[in-house]
Length: 167
Image (cartoon, rainbow, N blue to C red; front, side):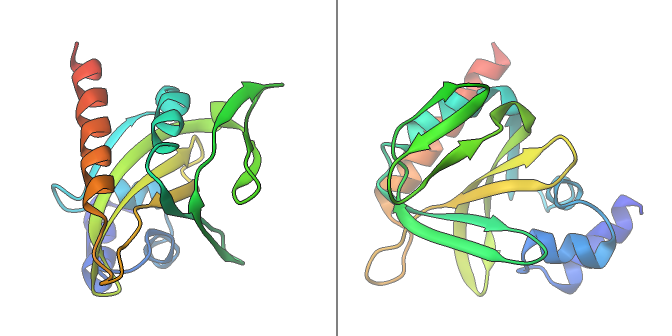
């Protein structure tokens, strides 16, 4: 499928989940991410996985999402500290725990787009096969607005990583 066809699928459902758009277009979620309109996504190499996750542990409560063809799993909690061991990135917190094959992360994307009529901001992790491993969405305050301190933290992380990539 061409990029034009993917863009057409995005245009049909501009605020839809990337996985849904990808399924409709017959491509991977990463292909959809790459075709998003200018300014909606900034991608960086997956080798930055541990650095990104370490920074996110300081952001407070976020929404951790895993979206597969069979389930959309969401947990609202802070991301606790993790460490590399036995070839995995291990999260030891009770709320969000598990073992991530971090070396399978090809790209990390900082994404800002409308979803269900709301502005969203997230950090998304993509595997080498183009699937989305998981997403971390910024939290919201009592008025459903994105938390300003988390926006600032995400902006600072993105700027620092982009600066390092340019060096």
